[in-house]
Image (cartoon, one colour):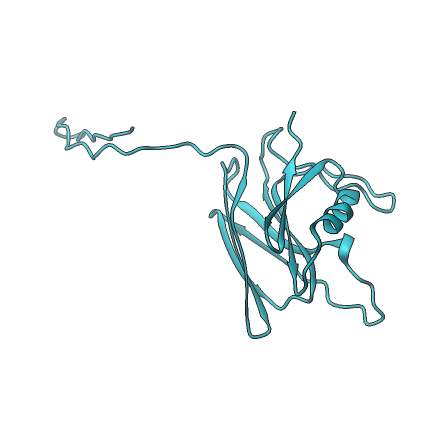
Length: 178
């Protein structure tokens, strides 16, 4: 319990203490509280909320099509990518999303070692960059996905991450902790 009392500098008198309140410290691990997916006309509305200690000044939240599920049709298709920098642990975005699987990453630039998710495996001879991702989930838009099929495909790209169903069309990453 925490109670605060202020002391006036000029008079030296103590003020009335505020009522005691229960305070808690956020954990280093970032956890998803809500991943809401809705629609309005031809638009997809995504409402995200997470909890965890922010070590930097702001979160970076991004929404991208997951490359492991991207189809390369003759027409090409549109690659949707959205990013928001925020001090809040909540993000709402409205976008015109094609049917498919989208990855949401929540990053913290100064996340301490042991609080980040492993980066994806490099593709086509690329190099793996250091990860600042604290939370990750995948959202299935426009169709139903079999959890086992989806996680098998994700495991090829993210071999050091376990997966858990969050809701009907949402899969979340669970880091392997020692």
